[in-house]
Image (cartoon, rainbow, N blue to C red; front, side):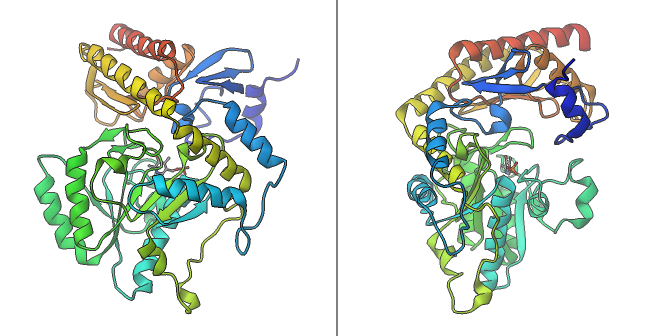
Length: 428
Ligand SMILES: *Cc1c(COP(=O)(O)O)cnc(C)c1O
């Protein structure tokens, strides 16, 4: 008998974030359409977390497919040093004006982590090029900025980084702002400021840290102080960008403008891998010199891949249509209605919604939710129901593609209510 995709996988593949000894057999996906993915047996799965937060318009979107095919017939790839091409230029032309904070230049790379690496290198070298000794990097506790070494360094130290902690560079971690700590936080940053090169942060929502949310007003007070004290602001909008938080970009909800933005995930509508780092004219100009050493020596083989650029441009066109915003508002309304219903449930804590994100904690009475059995129970429960929800420890969240229908969203909500009932019966 012919082996299934899942069986063949188990002989040759090593999966991300996966303990391969105990992980259940992976589901073999063969096709996607809208908010659904189909496995090799023909079962459909409702993609309630946008395939790791990347998909915004739905799977195999016909317009994106068409633009990809058009580009594929013309040019697949070309070196991007000394050469350029239409998709890269057109994407930058269309993207820069819609970004917050007078972004003037686009630097292309391959994924979210590389976009962060580029931003870090730009800020570090910016100060060197200006001959000013500012070396410290600030980041939030619970931050997540990626899995490469620079990106890991500015991310929270956790079980995910433990094996590498000795190899990560030093970063000053500060608390996210709240009413109770804002004054001490401002004082702390103020005293560190003269030595600080840059502050990297996930605006409004810390995604991998557990969909933790903070207020735009308090974030703005912190950012305004940083700006006043010369600290460069890197807004990591890799998850929050392209409509996740209600506005097109989360930074539209604060007054202080970022000096740099990192983008990936929704950038290509979840079709292909790409990272973008943007910066202001002021940062760009610090690299213009007759001195070769002031050059930004960074690049990747597939920098500005034309196929990927064409797909990102197509996704951006769809994103800027009024229908896309209307869909996001529709999801937000439904989320908020469900949040009210969910609040009656005893096993649920800290329900929060922002834009198309809804998150809450399943009460456990335990500290570290990630490694306990609850995560296993939740994963199994939703996989069996063919709803793709992947909890972060005991944090459960919905982050759907914007094309998800009211009925599909209702099915996700119902699965959560069913899970809570089962949890109440069996788990406690
Ligand atoms: C996912 C994520 C990254 C890393 O992106 P990858 O493409 O997975 O490397 C960085 N920052 C934030 C905020 C993210 O959510």
